[in-house]
Length: 154
Image 1 (spheres, rainbow, N blue to C red):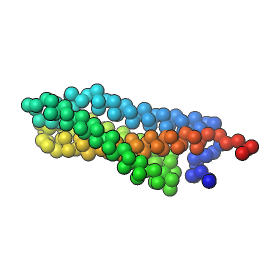
Image 2 (image 1 turned 180 degrees about the vertical axis):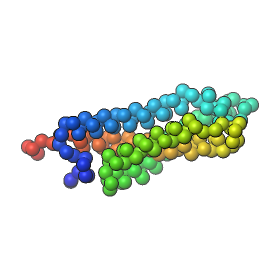
Image 3 (image 1 turned 45 degrees about the vertical axis):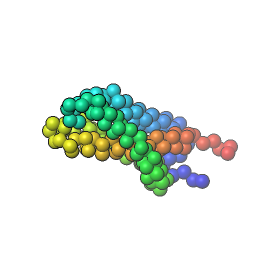
Image 4 (image 1 turned 180 degrees about the horizontal axis):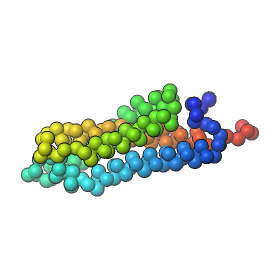
């Protein structure tokens, strides 16, 4: 079965680029998830009403979990898209999507500023992160092997 455009060139430098790009994408993806987990108490205090810290922290972790529930949906959407338009293109899109949603979370106003819209926007952006994370993982796993040099003996 022929490879998608530009994905199998046979050069070791292309394979290194693909592995490097996939590694960077995975590092960014899991960095975003780790930072959210480490900052959960700060997020709870900033994005939920004060008064019940336990409920705020549980809501923060529920939003953290929501991102993981979006992962299969991202795989269903971006998997076939990667087959049609190319995995490298999809990988670039999902890395940008992950980075943009992370930046937006960093710029979100707090509950004290915009009220109930703050946790709703946080939920939307975390779901966007989960949606793009699944595609990043799948595309990276497909690009790395498909970019390896081919042998003429096959």
